[in-house]
Structures are given as structure tokens and as C-alpha cells.
Image (tube, rainbow, N blue to C red; front, side, top):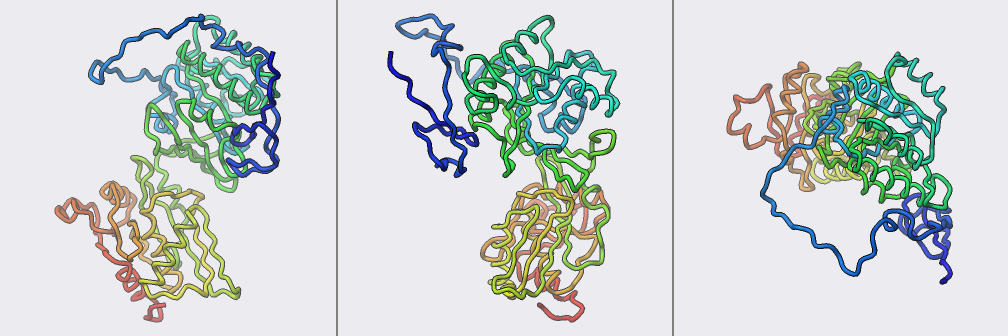
Length: 468
């Protein structure tokens, strides 16, 4: 019998090497490569159950045309969670939920499982990190102690699957967390790449066979990525991230991948002393308590999926005493800020090379769409010139390297959300449809075509009546 060669796997990204290395070439992590042994029996698992045959089985091929049916779903009873998942839990689907420690993952899952169990569905909560008594204490603290949720503290995957297949299949099974699970087919410690991959594969096979929706809770690394092999994210049907800052009382549920729904929707929750509360209008939450007369603040009308969202962008431009001025960003892409500053200097005539620049998205929300370029530029010019922007005006538009303001999608939805919250004006590029039908605008929108128009308009409001 041939001698088995040792295998070394990175515990951060799952890359496999035939010898030990100090640095992983795939993810760049140091001291993350650990020697792992595979299964003691190479025929353990699905391959062992397949009959030996000399050639493959012929199966029928079908065309694209034919009868299609919507995937059956089970609504969770939490509107924000159903929005992110696409309308509820699809039968037989597997969702990977990640988030920082203490962000509220277990609280969200406890509330979702209790809401589903109160509707008469069988729900199983399997905890690999806490005892049953600890889970019960959390449920009592949330006022959910009487919900008929089945609890267990177990880490062996084979025992969990054997237990859940007894009786009526559960509508939802929660595994908290996948890093604590282990399977007998793999000779590795729980939490290693091989164990996480093997345990996830067994649970996914159980979900597809029985029709139970399974939620796998995953730990995250220091940079916010879900820990473990990246192949697990490709194996599951949906990857959901629970984001937030412990310094703020709201949480964002964001779908990174979803085979049965949109991937750009978000759900907003507010953390309270009785658990997570749904926020039906996040714009009011993000704009609460803003200072209306302070230079350097602009309201951005953004979009998160199909939901319009208004958020305040704050900027501070101050003279620097350092040889290299500072550029600090919170909630936005730093490279995007560098591009906006370069366009303001090259085409707007501003001198920012000797100034420290700080940019912050109020409330802790992270913005990724390029439509925030115009709002960030307006806040920067306002801070440098000392001119306050109109408190009833929103800004949105993409900034090109030539200084031109480019149109963005779903401008009508952004303007409607601003009008609903009491805003009466908007500064944005003129979309073609609104140019052709100006009566459709819910508020007065000022068209802007170049960055020089923005700088001139804000500079005219400066107390010193000069452009900075």
C-alpha cells in the first residue's frame, strides 16, 4: 500500500499545499498553514455507497422550454429577514450567516426560530458553543421562553442528522456554529478546514434530501470575511452577512450571495434591551439628530437593492501640519475618496494638497455605490469653503475623471424617498426620463453637468464670498 503524503491546508482560505509554508500564497496569511490528515478510509462518504460500474449511466437531457415552478418558501415572520432572503426560507436551502462576535447573530436566529415555531412549524436549534441552559436564558431574556423550539447542544454531525430525521422533518434547522461541528469521516480537529468542509457537505446533503432549510452560523476573521474554506460559500445557496458596530444601536443584514433571491437587498434592525427590532424606514434612523447648520454635511440619496436610503455624509477639511496630509475614511471606499479629491483639484480648482481630509458616513452605514461621489464632493467643498449646504436638499451622482457628473440608476425612487421625508430639493445629474417629463419629479431637482458647477454654487454661499 502506498504511503499517504501529508497535506497542509490554510486555516483562513482553505488553500492546500504538499509542504509546510510560513505564509499562504493565496490569502497572504502568516502561520495559518497546518498539517491535516484526511479520512482514514478513502471510501468513506458518498463514494463508498456508489456501485462499481465500468461506464457511466445515461440520463435524459431537457431543453430550456418547459414548465417552471416557484421555489416553495416558508416565511419567517420577520419582514426584514424575509426581504433579504427573497420572501422566506426555501425548502432544502442552506444559508451561511456570518458576523462579528456579539453583533446579534444568535439573537436574530432565536427570534426567527421562535416566530416560525409559533406558526406551527417544527424548528430545531442546535448549539455547538453554548449549553441548553444558556440558550434558554437568552430566550427568556427576549421574552421567547414559551416558543416551542427544540433545543440541543451537540457537535457530532452524524448524531445531529440522525436526530433530525426522526419524525416530521423540521422546517428550519439552525447550526450554531459550523466551526464547532465535526464528522467521523474526517480525522481532524473541529474548526479545521477539512472538518468544516466535511461537516458542511454532510449538512447540505441532509437539507437537499429531507427538504429542511438549514442555517449555518459562521465565524468571521479580523477583516470581516467568513472564516474557513471559501469552498463552503460556493456550496451553500445563500451567504448572509450581519453587520454593525457595537458603538451604534442598529444592525444591517446583507445578502452577499443568494440563489433564490436578490443579492443587493438589506434588512435594518435596531438593537434594544428586548432583542432586535425591525426598522421599516431606515432613512429616519440615519438622519436623526443631524446638525442642519454645520458646513461639511450633505444628505446622500442612495439605493440598497430596491430600497431607497437617505444617509448623511460628513466631511472635515483642515490645514495640515504634516508633510503628508492625512486621509481618513469611515464607511466609504478610501480609493474612491482619493479619486474625488483628485478631480476637485484638477477640474474644480481647489487646493487640497496641504489639508487633512476626514470623511464619515453618519450612523455607521457602509456605502458601496458610486452614486455617492457627488454628495461626498459637496460635503468636502462645503467644509473647505465654510458654506453650509441647504438642509432640505439631497445629492446623488457619479463623478467622472473628466469632472463630468454621470447619471445613476433609479433616480425617480431616490427623489420619491427624499420627498417623503420632507426634502424639497435635489442636486443630481439629469436623467433622460426626467428631462423629458419634468412634471413627474416629486421635488425640485437642479441639474448639474460638471464639477465646476457644484463648486461655484457652494462657493457662492460662503460667508467670505470667495471660492476656497
